Length: 306
Image (cartoon, rainbow, N blue to C red):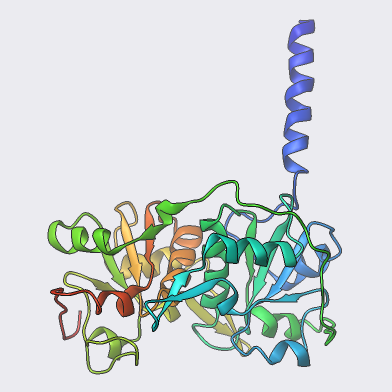
């Protein structure tokens, strides 16, 4: 009996230690403005302004937030192919100067105005998770939701104390390469899901850095903006409707999925919504996506609606 009581105390202590290891974030990695306001004074919370408009931060941002630009954690290869995950050294330096520690919880926010605006925050989560950081979340509705709630803003640049953060784990299984794409095209080892706008999917137009028009053979189409809903002028991720959105595109939640777009940006947003809102268990993002693929020799594309 005594042994059982001691064991129970040890287990309880262990659970407490785990739960207090860092600020707890929701399992679906979505927080709202109320949650952020309640927890923003927590010493382990790192708030990242990741809006596309880099000048917006200097005008107005959430108090205590630091600024990340996409170029801070992505890299261009082969002189003109953007969109690849940044090198380990690049990401490590970013974490150190951002004040991130092993106990940190990171919340990213975008502007919350466009139907695809959440994707840049999803990209932040995706790259962080690739480098082993899993205690992350997105502010649903972004900066627009924060302002809509009447919360205070600031225009002072935040410079955190530098840390000694280092990479201790990497989730390379989250990333697909050209070999994975060839396998999916030829022998259907994974579902290919095109997250781009319709004009890019059907080949009537293309991104300026994509060399050929069209979509991958056998792909299904699911635009990243389909995961959102607008409420009082603010664009939110539709957590309740995410699963139905994926199923409506005839994507099987249980089978492997490779999300792709033009550079990997939109695909990362789809990966976030698919994994954390719809319940997709086995998903990858094609790093470099169509910009990468259309530079590969002797690969075919298909034009027309899916």
